[in-house]
Image (cartoon, rainbow, N blue to C red; front, side):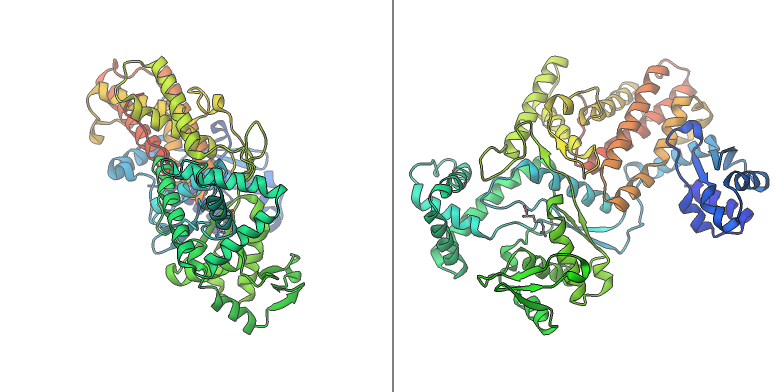
Length: 569
Ligand code: ARG
C-alpha cells in the first residue's frame, strides 16, 4: 500500500531540507477527521529553522509539490499543516490490499527474525487462579497474538508459581483435615479450601506455620512422598487452569516456573559472587543498588534460601540462551514494579549483553476492584476465574434468550459472548488503570463493549450471507464509496496495521480495543445511513465489498484480542 505518511514526509523534506525519516516521526493522526487525515506540527521545526511555527507552515504549504494522486489538499491552522489525502487513491489501495491478503490484511513482516518472549499469566499453584491473574493472561495473550501477526516469533511463557511455602501450607493442611473435605470428588476446591483455612487458623495458632515450614523443608530436601504429593497438586492444578485457558484462547510454549529453576540458581549466585556483587546485609546476601536509588535486591535470605528474585535472574539467563530474545516482556501487576526494576538492574550489574538488557520490559497493570474491595486469596473473599467466566456465560445466555430465542447453538454463542465480554472489558482501558468489575457495563450490547463489537461484526456477516456473494474486486468501483461514512471507514481500515504497530510499541492492547469500537461505530452509522441490498448493482457491490472489509478487520481484531465471533447472535 502507499505509505501516505512517508510520501508526505518526503515532500516536506524537499522543501525544508530536513531528514525525511525524522519528519515522518512527527506526523500525527488528528483526533478528528475534520482536521485532515494527517497533521504536521511545525513547532517541531521552529528551533532548527528559526522561524515561528505558523510561518513555517505557510512556507511549506506555498512551496510543497503536491501529487494530486496522493494529497488532496493542505490547510494551515495555526502552527499545524492539516493534510487531506486523496480518498480515491486511499480507497483503491485499501481494497486491493484486502483482496490480496484477505484475513492476513494488516499483518506484516516488520518483526521477521525477531524473538519476543512474553511472560504472562503465571498463577500460583495451590492458590486459586483469581481474577487478578486474568489481567495478565488476557493482556499477555493479546500481545502474544499481535506480535505473531506482525511477523515476530512470539514465545509465551507461563512462569508458574509452583514452589514455595504455600505448598507447605496445603500439604500440612491436607494431613490435618483430609477427612473434612471432599478430596475424592472435588480435589481442586478441597485444596483451595484447605489453603484458605490454613491461613485463617494460622493467625491464632502460630505453631501451624512451623508445620508448614517443616512440610516445605521436606519437599526441598527431596523427600519422596512429599515430592509426589507436590507433583500431584501441580498436575491437577494445571489441568484445572487448562479449562480456563481454553475458554480464553490462551496459548503457552513453556510452563517452566519457579520449581524448574529451583536447582538452576547456583550459576547465577556464583557469578554474582565472582564479580564481587554480593554483600552481606543483616544475615542476607544482597546486591547493593544504591547507585540506582533502589533498595538492595535480596539473593539469599538470612535463612539461607533463594528467593523470587534469584529465580527470576536464573530464568532470565535461561531465556536469553534458549530464545536469544530481542524483547522479553513481563506482564505482571504494578505492585511488582520494584521487583522488576531490581532484577533488571542486577542483570546490568552482571554485565549481561546490552542487546538483552535493553530488551527487558516490565509491562505493569492496575488491580481488579470488586465492589467489596481488593481481592485476597488468603482471606477467602475471592472470586475464582472459572466461576466468573461461567457466570459471564450464564448471563449472556439469558440475554440471548431474550433477544433471539430461536438462535441455534445458544450454548456456543453464549460462551463466545460471555468470555468475549470479560476479555474486552479487561482490555478496553489503559492497562495501568485499575479495573472495576461491573457486569452491567461489560455485557451492555450498546456500550463500548465486546458484545457490541461482536454484534456489529455479526451484522456484517448476516448481510453478506443475505446478499449471497462477496463481489469481485474487479467489479468494485471505488468512486461509489464517496459518502462520508464510507470514507471514514476506509481511513480507519487503512490505519489497521499502524494501530497494531502502536500496540507493540506501547505494549498496550487497549489501543486495538478502542480502534475496534471506532470501526464498529463507523459501520453502524454507515449501515443506518446507506442502503445496501436494494441499490443498483454498482453501488450495491461497492457497499458489499466495504462490508466484507469491515467484517475481515473486526473479526481479525477481535481474534487478536483472544475473542471469537459467532456467525449469528
Ligand atoms: N507468580 C507470580 C505472582 O502471581 C507472577 C510471576 C510473574 N513472572 C515472573 N517472571 N516473575 O505474583
